[in-house]
Image (cartoon, rainbow, N blue to C red; front, side, top):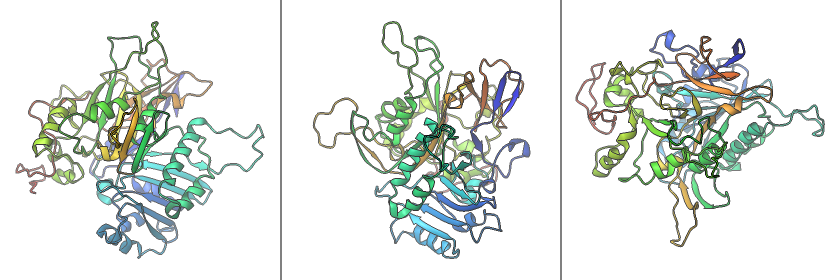
Length: 506
């Protein structure tokens, strides 16, 4: 935290990862995997992920502890004959301190897509890290990724609970802990029971974030709150507690902007039966803090934008076409073309710099292709400040967020009732200004920051007591696709050479 005058400046809760082939000026405040796993104080590490190179992971620990740190790796290849599981077990067999744990993933199109690390330390502290990278070297080298790290968590004091000197749990930290433990409980006691028991002994009092996750299953919504913890249902519940800074009385004013930035857009259907009526509706939820005189609440209608790279942006990326192996959309069949047609009004460039009139602020990441997934609601169309921001493993898919409400029996259902199916494990973290307000301080404003984590000291026009930076992975303002722009599609061939002189052949 830094301060000048009456306004305190706080560093971004989300950090970008270090990019090998960018200059130091673009890597200010960026972190590497060694910054996370290289501490000699680490005693035990639980690593949840999708793609994992065990040899590479073990080499990220400090050499002094590499052979003694207790490493648990949780993956989604649960079938014994699965080639990936066999490879993981073969790699892990070379390390007596590494254990492979397979999460049960019953849905055929579901994955264990979660990207999370939980650390226990010799000084009796713990830490939760939520990020966007697979645990392979490729993801931590030249791809744009991001990380959220909790504060170091102490053990809960063993004291008389009636002692007034014992700090009471903050509701938000306690909620984060409860949701994280509920997520871990879904894996089953035989898989992560020891982690569940151990983590429950730590205090999350200093955590200022909301845990947002998905767990595979079919969930019944009965209109009384049941089944609303995971997927878009859990996201909607979380966002419904966040107040908006915009004036709800203003019918004609700027309603803000929700920007989704993902590395994969799944097959959502030839008609818009999920993106707008389900996910966008959930993302638009908010806590109403003022009421119009009539007593009715005016619905907020923020603009929706989806940032996704074009083929030209992949060609220009640091890895050239090789970056495209981690970025997915299909646009070859008639239904996929129909999907692209309704997506097109929302699509925006990852790198807007081909039109220099658009770029006012530079993130330093336009050539590092995006594997990050970020969901941000800005206060206005110009993206001047932030209502909330989420970092997550979840891409744009029904597998990740859950299907639309369905009626499996065919009978009558009331509003908000039905069944939602989630196929994948996902984990994310959500932050918003109110989380960082203390009882003795005024409002907090979160603003986009570029090439560093802390707002400039020159920012002096804020009316807030605190100004927090949100490290941006993309340039602003956002630039919509032109009529001839097409998203990168890794399942089709490209004869045009990338900057490294390579073509892309399927």
